[in-house]
Length: 231
Image (cartoon, rainbow, N blue to C red; front, side):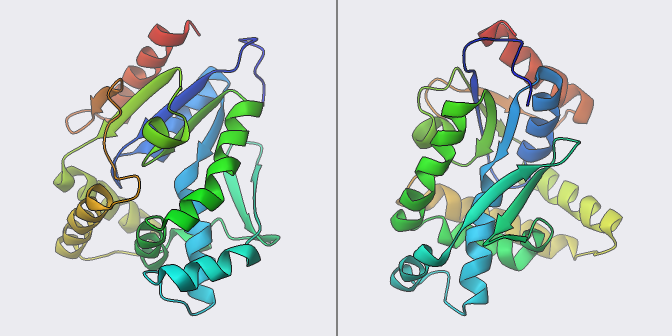
């Protein structure tokens, strides 16, 4: 990844609820600004996939903790800057995008042992590269000293509809009402958990994309980053 545009390391933390567009917007902004994009949600999904494969209940903290030493996670990037996820050497990039894994990841990520297990991996990436890192607690826990903190959000109905359209395009349609219920349930779970709950950092910039299209949202995100970093 080319970081020639700045000699110092730049870190951008993007947090927000499920379906807010964090991954898509952060990836596009990283490409535009020549930064490394890190999707931490994919890291937790990869962990959750291993837990499910081993037959453990995602909510069983002791069982999940016992399986962590078996997990080897690595990241790679293709020619287009797309983050590829590897679980013990296997490319699981597509396998971690199912609804089952998504819900399991939300549960697994609430366990302190899991967060501690993955914390240093995430911080190390920011130490070695200029990054845009997205997730649920990047600005509050993972990179509290980030140069820029953005809390990206949108109304639950808007996020559920975006997900519905995405699944339609993939040829894997889902019921709209069910998706909306799942979106709201995950919001409650992420915001209400004891360990690293989803909330904006005090010094974050709120970016609500409910009434913005992709181009407008991306333009605003890049504007915020440039204003605060001089990129």
